[in-house]
Length: 146
Image 1 (cartoon, helix red, strand yellow):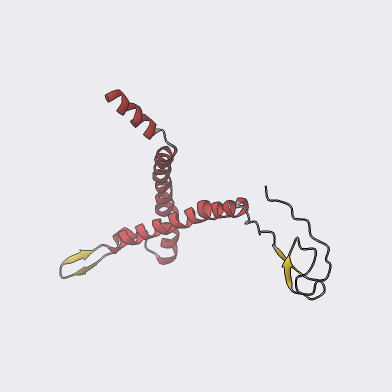
Image 2 (cartoon, one colour):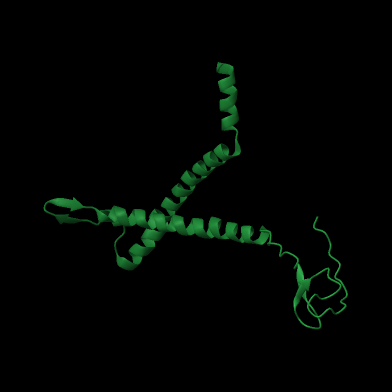
């Protein structure tokens, strides 16, 4: 019984979506570290050069002897915006383009009727005589669907 459960567990672990999820989490953690470094080491100092504040984490205010550290929130918000922007431009937009490019276009069905060339009434494509005006008409050959 234990061997059967171990085999089922191994089968579960080796399914594609579990492995994909694990790889996605590892890459996400690494990507977050890179973006955090980008925000802390490049973007924040550039903003500090304009504003004059070298680190937002020191920004705070006090209400009723409680210190509110809103600078850490600004740092986290900047990191989130950079991550979201990077994911949108690096992952989402290219995937949308690929899906659009390789998406099968819906096939329009072959019409089952046509207009009579004499009276313009709707007739079957295979008809050789119009039921309205009784004119002789050249039938259209219908190719069966595969």
